[in-house]
Length: 398
Image (cartoon, rainbow, N blue to C red):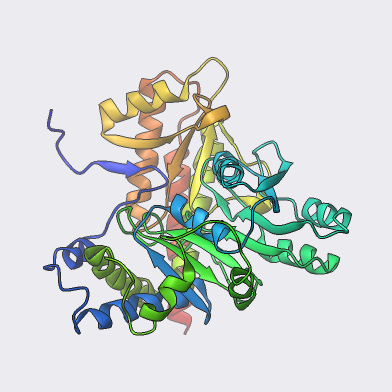
């Protein structure tokens, strides 16, 4: 049945695709071997370096983020290598399972899924690995299942303090272009990303940003690879081409999305996401509900996971909200199924869209008879209005 108005897609990815990107993707498909394609390819490859904040190699795959996970591992490691992985949530757990299926030996640092990775625990594990059997440390920068962010600069500092030579890998699938990330400055060796969240595209592209140290490790890696092989990409990428058929129209969209991010300015993009996450948490607090992440310094700026009171099923609440208000909210995953719902506030998203989202959540809580206090949307609106007033005053003072 047709639902009037625009659907509110407020899951933490895939996110809303802006009209400019949709129009760019609507261009006729061109010959990916022809001279005109090189301009598109180089714009995307060079443009993504600016988003990762790197001047090193960036690889673009026609694949999901899971493919980029696999590419990071198979290009740098060998069968039986130990990999230190921080289980901060559902997606960190999945990356660990993928590593095991590839013939690697994951070493898990477990958490309660209510915070980011603990740098001190990583340092301790590396200190104990005197034989340097651990070849890589894998951390999900922003855990999409929990709304917790790991402090990658502190992770790198903890690793440096041990003098351990392990590679550092980061999953930025739900943080890139939403939360500040600095591949080079933070000494990350392989950064994994996907197109469908902060980059504002449909699913279908994934990325590896690769350090010189990781490229050196690739020379001795013995895990089987073909499609994911970095060295196959290197030659064609220099001139803007790919060794196999690329996702041509998605690359049109990526080029447009990169332009949009730079027009707004990355610092402004990150500030907008911080503002929306703070407004959302204030709404949750006013409702009398609890944010899943219980470590303030690890709060995600891309999404907020909200716990429902005992005896109330989050999936039933989500279904009620979808039915009555045409809004999709993220579900709880694996051990969090039915216990939390997730509010996505990332990508092409502004203050009014956030207010519509939070109003829909508050109305949904009422219709679903979830115990709460009213006024959360109002609390968020007051914060956003105050932030806008402060910005106007600052501009006037200049």
